[in-house]
Length: 576
DNA sequence: AATCCTCAATGTAGCGAATA
DNA sequence: TATTCGCTACATTGAGGATT
Image 1: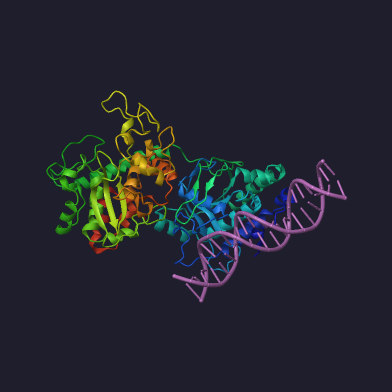
Image 2 (image 1 turned 90 degrees about the vertical axis):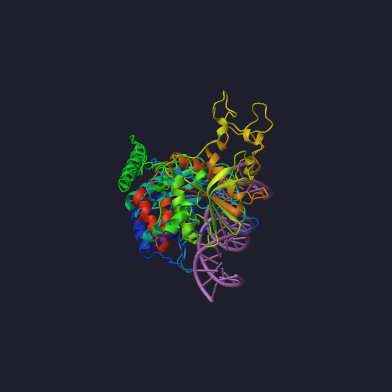
């Protein structure tokens, strides 16, 4: 069947409105189905998703504004809200669709993402050209979107599998939605003076939307400056674009907004159930005996190690127990909520089994290896003091991995609903806080940050890794919500000699995938995205769930006990 | 009549996937 | 790993219409 019409690039401006009106939706829908039936399918050793570095591949000058724009947007980890209120998260850019070189007219998906419910979304990005060129007309963008959606749909299962494996996400096996995301200038250049074409396009999109049962959203974003990237310097957007929607196609009724609140309560309830069920299997006197509602099981002070998940093998078990000194245990170490106990159990197990190499299988949510490349020579230590940041009390890393002088700083979360914030704005026992929450000279100080004033060197390093300048006032201080995350990133990228080496380390956040604070739009998620959006080094901040981490040991004989134990105790297990 | 402007057609650069 | 290939965005060209 004729799929040719989906590939037409001839849309003369003079007859744009007429040509759009003349589009026969039935014919195009048929072409969509035909293209789907004959779509290229990439061989298994050539993935669709993942493998992108966040850097452009080339050095020197370029005119490829659009690609840099897309890379910058994905790097910024900024999702946005679709007109029906659904949150969209961008996962990848330049997704190839060709199976063979000879596949004609098959390009790459500018950006690919999922809605918060796991529905696939194809984003076709249109920006004004490097030198102000108008770029393709809107119908071409629409057809590109349809083509990509058709080819994507033909490979849905395959792509869902890749998302699961490489990004730890679940995708619904549904026809993708299409977002045509154009810079405001691009839209107005083509449709500004031509109201007829504009309404023709919107009407046609509605028809397509109905005929094919997919969402088509036109989004306009504020024009923004792109700082072009290089092989070692990621492209950046000067400011995050602001979106609005010239057409509003409410596709699905907005899912209940109290969903998130319910989710948190349900999760807590399920945790308690799982915990107390597990507690039943313990012996009399193993718990501290206190029972208030809402309180998790807490093991007795006589045998704190009971809060660790341990193998039957005695040697391995004692190696795990010894991984964190007793003095370094947190106050709430004995609680089932303790993320420290979780971290010690899991990472201690990998180490004790001599299988740190398995960690390189774990994929972070950005598609990169969560822990970088690890080998059997990787060293792992817990509760490591970081002394490179000039802090009076050094940052403690939950877990520190080192492979050939590449450092990974791991922050382990479990029940926590957010990240630590800066202490200077709190009035702990003093009348006025040491900082009013802005990054500016205050209270007669010589530096803008109360911590810099006492010799903490965060701000010496921050400009090398974040878009925040230490020579400019900021209100509020960008470190307010991102304090702990930033500290972890700095701990990973600042070396012993006090130099920033962004390519020599990264930070990872490990969290419970069921914890709603980390779901799109949740409190912790927002903190992470704020940090990521300002971070100029792609991959410096990665995130991964415990669910994904324990998946890595499923086929290692020495570690099969771990997934079972963590499922038993906390209800954590890799999905499918 | 000279000049400017717009736009479609044609040509090129950039770049990464495909291929060998 | 190095080379080839072809797509997309971008640049240039020139026809023809509009303006001065």
